[in-house]
Picture 1 (tube, rainbow, N blue to C red):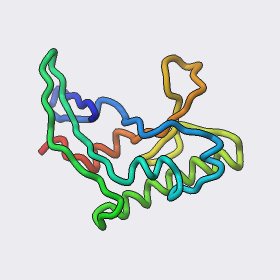
Picture 2 (cartoon, rainbow, N blue to C red):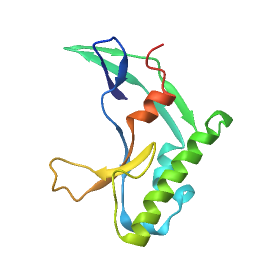
Picture 3 (cartoon, helix red, strand yellow):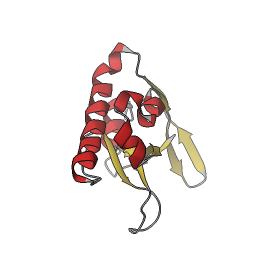
Length: 135
């Protein structure tokens, strides 16, 4: 499930990114995308957008994303490309940057700017493109 918000013009948009899984630099160094925990977690996803208005919650149309469906081949190619960019940047430069990745990103997880824990996230652009929010 992921929260959405309504803009003043009535459009529904993702409120935040979706956490996929924690990022381990040891695993990142050792595993390509297809053998990664990140890929395994995303191989079949049920995405349920919801809108909260005070105490009322409205669940919107769910979407299943399945790696084995031909419809999502390009999506998983993008995930793989994003993962490989993150991985290559870490292996070659020892750096993890949240700017890396089109639909999949890595960034700190936890409160404050001093957090050292990182995780993979799906960017709001992913939900806008693949989960119907305004239908």
